[in-house]
Length: 127
Image (cartoon, rainbow, N blue to C red; front, side, top):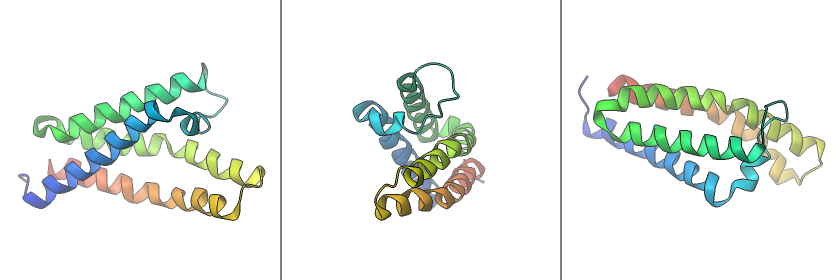
């Protein structure tokens, strides 16, 4: 199906979300470092920067109509790929006795990943 105005808007909004998040990996890397599971090899900061580059690249691929389908799929895979980090964050908040507000936000982030995956797949399908 060709891009309609609404599907272009959805693609641009998703790209904006990913670009903002990707930029934050470089501007404020410390919170992202804490999401990296210790089982991964290498430094947490390298993973933070690498995932920031991935998010920026995926955002760029979604903006370009010729690569939008691939970008939508890559975004969906990225959202699935970062899910373990979000689980880690929720468990760490609980384990460390963070304030109730922080714990609630961390746990509520988990089910939000799945609508993001669906959004990315919709962008792919309409690309």
